[in-house]
Length: 446
Image 1 (tube, one colour):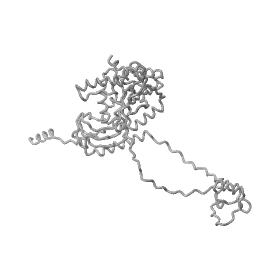
Image 2 (tube, one colour; image 1 turned 90 degrees about the vertical axis):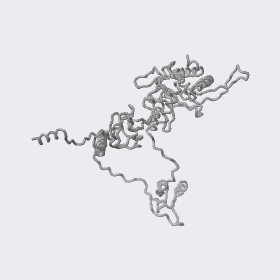
Image 3 (cartoon, one colour; image 1 turned 90 degrees about the horizontal axis):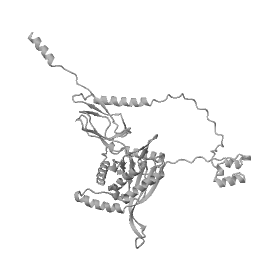
Image 4 (spheres, helix red, strand yellow; image 1 turned 45 degrees about the horizontal axis):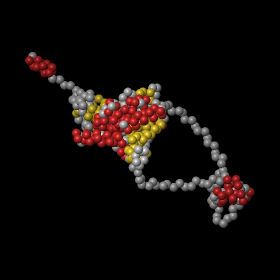
């Protein structure tokens, strides 16, 4: 009796259970609303390695930047499907298999193969092939009715060729050897029609071996592909027009020198650039002429109340435009600090989508490269982009001067506008306001 009770107690306290296997698919996430595909820059966890909430699982290359993907829960990276460097991975396609602590990982490889096959079959079902049409026999091709090229060998050298004078004349003009023509005249005489209908046999083709390649092919990145498609679309679809003015930068340069002298006394790294003044002047001008701070959205024209200024930054992988948000409400020092931080993140490929998506107006400045003048392509759906050239010393008339002229620092800027939203007169008013702020920079402080 006692042994029976002990057995019952043993069975209640101890039992065997199968190993748990709650494997799950980890699909390619969409890092932005417009993202359809991306690349795997690098996995930060190895197969079989555990991770906690907030850990970075991998870096995904989008069309604009490389973004960290963090874990939402604790788990284990059971199997990697899309390896480092994979390109063109569609959103929603499985890229890894995840598991929980205590799960059986022995079936991860089989589960991964099944997930890939299911994803592939689902993609094929969306694009079902059209039923093949029954093959119809081709109609017999008509025999060529043109004159036949005679393949008879050339006559031996010295044999007489009978041809009419006009046939000889035409053959001489066209460089046709009479020895290769079969005459249709009396006794095989070559006549005019024989020469005119003559077709030379095709010359034997010779295979030319390609020379050693003196070029380098670079694979197109997602970012470069997106830049190409968007700018091509903008140039083809948007009715661009361009307005150019010269801006006297003497007062800006003097004020910048005074500000920088004061700032460097507190922080040697703090320094205002000419571009900081330009960003501020653009924001102020947009406040005066809000029609330029707009976007074409198909059925409506949206006019923005705040100036979110995109500043074009060149990176090793392409051009990107981080945003200084609500620039009109910020001082020059704040604009300078934000621009420097965003530019560094852009070059390091660490911008978040919220830092480069959107914007209401774009500035492209090539002045630091010595470019005096250029035109820029609008970044849709924005209406305007400002191309800024280098500041150059220029002689201008000055009746008040004894010599009758003086040297001033001139900066040439060109506004590219979308004529659907910004008429020429509106663009001119905006440029006048922008020019006024830079030529009287103390108005920034009012």
